[in-house]
Image 1: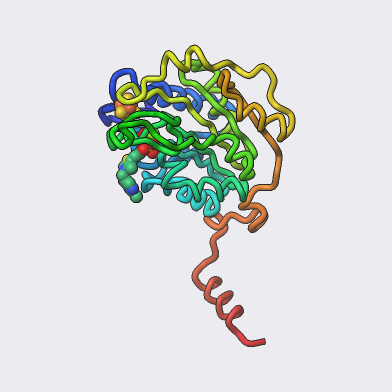
Image 2: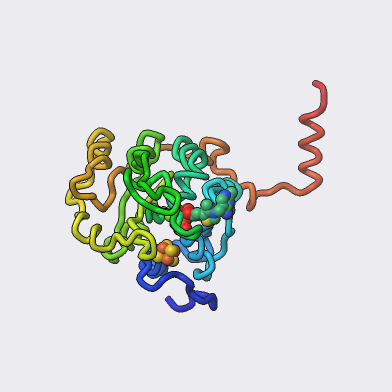
Length: 280
Ligand SMILES: Cc1ncc(C[n+]2csc(CCOP(=O)(O)OP(=O)(O)O)c2C)c(N)n1
Ligand code: SF4
Ligand SMILES: [Mg+2]
């Protein structure tokens, strides 16, 4: 566990839900290793925000991306070397605001990536503006009279877009959460976990989620059932909400080819280019 951490000082607020996400992810990496996925094959990325500090605190290879561009970054890494498992830590603003188009298109094409979305319902690092996931009426510095917009529902939105693995997690239910991360990374295709993450400084939701979440007893079997569960609001279901086997983007694109491991020599590339350009 310890060797998965780094020297970087943790600058999250005491009590922040991100601590639980960091600890769960480290434990999930160890479980994945026990299942044969070694840590050098797990590549991480992040967007910009409080969630992005996950990148500083994990001793894993990857790419600290731009705000909203981490979904594109890990898709690029995956198609360059399909042998790798690629995971991004994405904020709700990052994933559903600035980066929404990347997120939706990754789901549409069933890119074989994992998005762990820290849903704190706020642009936390930039001090508390509303995001596309803040509830109507939520008051912050940019919405002093309350947000006048309805939020997106990330799970129903991504289900509609074509996601093949969708789950919701609450870090206080640590073992349950770790198991969901393992399943999401193992899944072949687009996997997404909405993590209910209290941001104590701006939106302290610990008590609310403790009282208003429940572990799903039965995983929905169909798209219609999953949509119903994704839209539930009385109690927020946590667990796997949808899972489906479907061909993945990189295999549809070039079968089992691996551009990194099977790259051609310069001479062979030039030969191919000449061949392509020659008039037949
Ligand atoms: C292109 C671009 N736009 C805006 C910003 C400023 N910015 C940095 S972090 C952030 C908010 C992040 O919110 P979220 O993704 O929800 O992450 P959190 O801090 O809540 O974890 C913004 C708007 C930026 N860095 N880059
Ligand atoms: S501002 Fe919110 S998300 Fe950021 S470290 Fe503090 S509690 Fe955590
Ligand atoms: Mg946020």
